[in-house]
Amino acid sequence: MERNPIVAGQFYPGEADTLRSELHKLTDKNAQKEDVLGMVVPHAGYMFSGPVAGATFSRTKFKGTFVIMGPNHTGRGAPFSIMPEGTWKTPLGDVDIDTDLGAQILQGSDYLEEDSTAHLFEHSIEVQLPFLQFFEPDIKIVPIVVAATGGDIYKEIGRSIARAAKELQRDIVIVASSDMTHYEPQESADRKDHQAIESILRLDEDELLERVENLGITMCGYGPAVSMISAAKELGAGEGELVQYRTSGDVLGDYSSVVGYAGILIKRRRYYAPDGRIS
Image 1 (cartoon, one colour):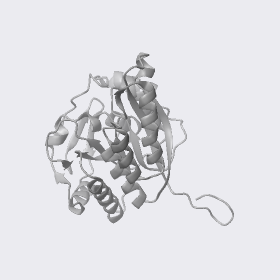
Image 2: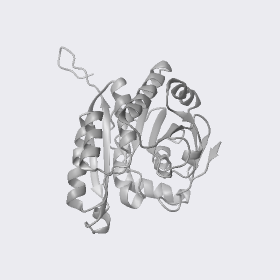
Image 3: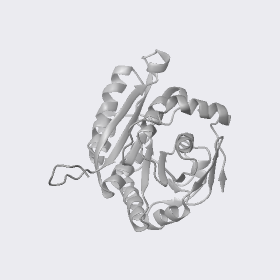
Image 4: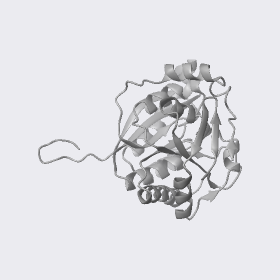
């Protein structure tokens, strides 16, 4: 199946040359790269969340496949939807799905279903692709969309991703596509978002779920974040880093009702040799 872009010309430029120019402004190819297992990256229009997304991707050592998990904003399709084969189109060209990895993840999960309907009009994965193509034109992806559910299902999906990567000896990065608090005053959004960010940096899925529920944090991709953390820990994650946090108020100058955007890296565990060197 070919999945055509639905927010090109809206969330990001629809012409290839204009899009490349915009991505050049939003990224830093000379930034220090990290061995990243997982990421949280926002998915709003580039005008708002592009600087955060660009800074976060700029810090990432690119690998062969990115597993990109997004929330289901549309309500379409199966609740836990994976596209194990096909091509996603953007103004910069085609992005192929890693069919071997997609099939292995699907086979190993009790909950994921092969489904394209959930992906057809969902923007949360699409907006990440031009950033990937800008750094690595031949990058491959596995797209997964998840609906609201309990934490145990999110964790199981994460573990199925990790198992598949290990079985295929595939070096991957798992992207949780998520914006943070939606449409609250800046002070409230900042306070709530940093509670969620703190849990992610500690790699504590249960605390993240608890804080989202108890504090009423309207983070749309908390489910993908839980799956990403679970997978990353299985693959050897050791620490998180907040790359950047901004809100829509920083763009518009109106802080009365903002949306938050966080860029987070989940990095591989470091090992210390007897001589003190880090490996």
